[in-house]
Image 1 (cartoon, rainbow, N blue to C red):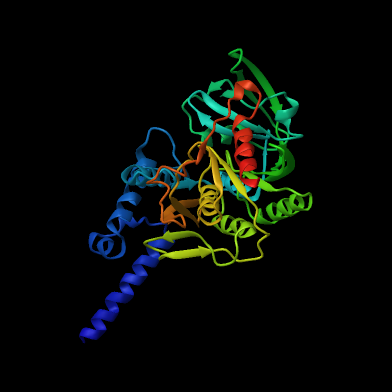
Image 2: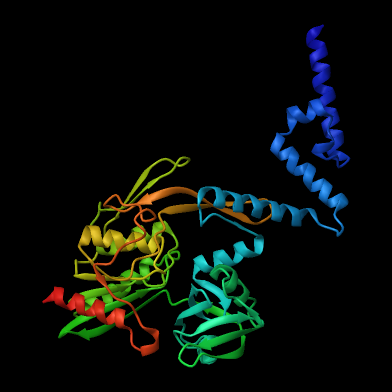
Length: 395
């Protein structure tokens, strides 16, 4: 008899829940005993607050808008409580733009920038881009977007406002640090394909040297890197400067494959530790090119995968590191998709250089030779210093 009673109660509960779902019933509306069984306290509280806001707020608020705000709030709390600068919530639109950046293509005006107190410093203007046609130069500052100052705003938020659909226009304020004058430029956005790897031969100190610049670690970038270095070798270079300045990183896999261009198989590139994913060691996969003396050029904009590559070349190939200290990002993230089309990018672990250093704790990769570019001079002093240091090693 007791078994029949239990079964009947189970059927009743299922019928009740199904009816509630079919009628649009809210979890917070369940009777207290059932709510305690079927709804987690925190989830029930969130649902209750959502319903209260929708029913009572003085302006109409959609459920999607509240869910978006809730997700942002959770991530902000995580960041604050754990001193985590890198976990993020991406709305569907922000995720689209993030994936564009990882792919190496986006719609914008064609600038590479870094954050400064007054706005965005222009580090690079891409050839053939709308920004180049508008006359924007390296070293200038973007100080406003659509008439609104971006001083103190994060570079991510500012660049999101500059980017937009191909064919639309954006007005930016550009300040020349030499004259301190600001001009307003209205520029039509275009599809930009990032020149991720560029290279050339340079004569320095009586030596024939190669110079390769990497702008990021997008999918497949190790291929163009290998081609560029192989081409320079065929042209008879004696050493190579690898410029990773303003390179904010990207895919960990590409850092490992890029290191494999220079290092023999089985060399440790990076080691990771994660509470949820376990510990791992990433090694080079082989098919490396013959060894060359290398100088790696870094600055505060060198981060993540770029720091991993710089440290691996310094630890395993004796590369001389030139510039200023790097960003110091000693953690890595995983992107997890959400049902609304957005995603959470969560910090899931720490990484360590081949020498066992966590770059967050050490405050980045520190150069062997300090050098800083002075934008006002029109010369690239840091690159010249790297070429000089490399030439001394090839003699």
